[in-house]
Length: 221
Length: 236
Image (cartoon, each protein chain N blue to C red):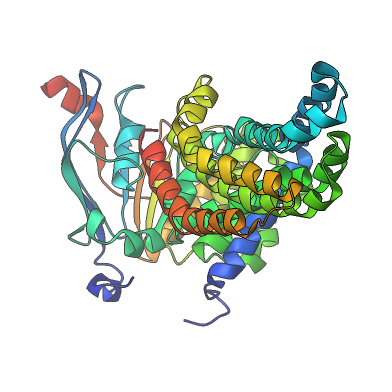
């Protein structure tokens, strides 16, 4: 399971996309996208609705395959180090992975067991996110913002993950929730982690990193 | 790396147990999913004495086949939604992207499904056997063949459910078409065992073949299902 990439020092990790091309039927959705997300930075992917942000993120974390091109983690293709990369990955997708019939606590307990998270911290994290009082209600009964908070709680429960791939983490969140996410992103960057995210909201000024716009690629075509 | 900040891996069996209890909690909160198959099974079999006529001779001849066909259909009809929720709420994506083996997830789901959709069939089968005038001596064999057979059917059906998870509404029929050829041997040897038992003939051969089919399904089906789920997730 472990390969030579496990011993990389923190701060030298990177997630790199090389000429990612994805076709949706007859339409070219992503055309030779290149990007590099470095440790300690928050790499942002911008673009209009339908420009392929979610698809790109899914390719970056290995959930979907690109028709052409490759994704490298620390210089090694994902396909050659699936397990190593998955241990270090925290992905919160467009569908947040929160089961409607399970409570917040049940959802997070399983997520922690699957990803080596800190189960003992669940209550305090839910408290920080202001959803502890409703932690025993099936998630399907919660509001969109509250469900988003349940999914985002994983950010604080898995501090050992090195690569965060987040699809619209700020959607449906109020100011307090956005601040909490910004703090998590900052802490992750200070630990030397890699972050790639999409958002339509402005991020906190403390977070630095490149912004890649998919619209530019569209214009160039 | 202290155990305080980063708990060690809970092991595959621990993971299996957590996943199993997750599946059971979900099922308890949506009882329709597992009540439907068992009700279907009971209704279909109780209709036969009404439709065919209550003559003990006819009924006891067709009983093994009727009970087994009903069990097969009831399992297949319920299985189509096995991965539906998890695919649509993103849990499956999380499972695929975790460092834990996906086949353990599949096994846990399959076993939970058997506990709710297979075991109840087994438990009511003696009553239905009496209703169908099956000789008493054949009832233990019926239960044993259903125990082995329903597990195999669910393991094999999971492959079909995974392959058709992204299909949507027509998925059920497509799944049945895909999987039915693979389930026919189970039906033949399952009902064959019960028929043999009803005629006071040895059943060892049929049951051994059912065990062999179960061993084959148990070792290969989770891997095939996991591969199909990876495809389903990457198709989005």
